[in-house]
Image 1 (cartoon, rainbow, N blue to C red):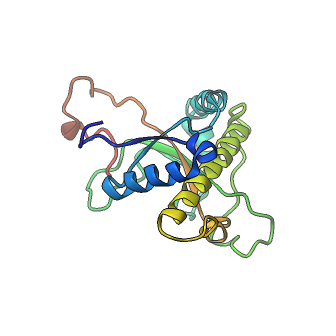
Image 2: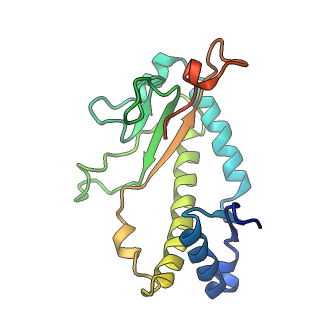
Length: 196
């Protein structure tokens, strides 16, 4: 691995050699702020199913997708249409549409106002279930990473558990539709993409 390459860390180390996982993950974050997690445990079948369900959802007609937009919520849950979001400081809208899915809370939960319920989709077969499943799988993966980072920072392994168990994590499913006339054009000229 070269000096300019983001480190690759196998999540299998979490179970087989937790100390090595802590060391590799901690080093990657200290040096780069990023890491590529290999053997992450999110089933390939679930990833493929989520991808196909997302394609079905984003293929719906615009007016059908808008049924799942929650007005006045700032896009916290559900659908946000193409050309709505703008990167901070940009004069141009990002050329994407997206879906937000967050943590499911029990009715009457103390954070219900800040974390609205997820939106169920009836118009794209399998979308709600696959999105809910992949969110849970990624959330569990994140908990493993946080355990290792806690130890790396000199804390108890479960230090972050009660700080994130009700956290407002969001899965953003993004779709970049084709932009007319963009083939071969400079991205800055036609505004394709999204701001960082």
